[in-house]
Amino acid sequence: MAYVVTDPCIQCKHTNCAAVCPVDAFREGPNFLVIDPFECIDCDACVAECPEEAIFPDDEVPLEWEDYIELNDRLSEEWAEHVINQAKESLPDVDKWSGKENKRKHLIESWEEETV
Image (cartoon, rainbow, N blue to C red; front, side, top):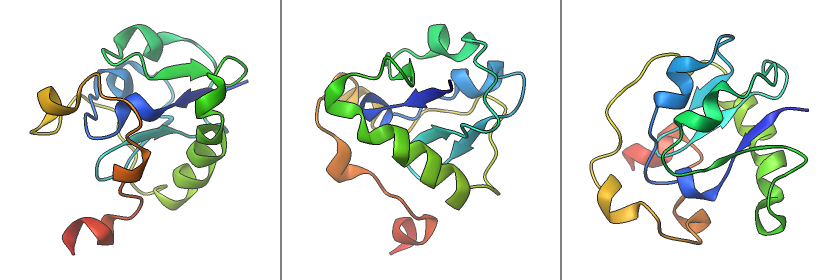
């Protein structure tokens, strides 16, 4: 079992969760974080640190976000060089996005997309 970052993280990207991860399992994208399922040791430390309540064990991901299991797996590979293990400032519009639902269409999957 691994932990999975889901929809509420998009456009917020709090990083407290990554700072407490003992094995550097978090990967950073332009507006989202993911957990590498092969690095995650299921310690649960990140869950309490996420103010958006976006992190779940893979067997407890809400049905509407089950595709985030595969998304974390895929993006953790694509973002392998973007290991994050310390807290950073959240995204500038975090207050605007916090608590919003159905943010998947706003996910930027590539660092190149962000610069376009």
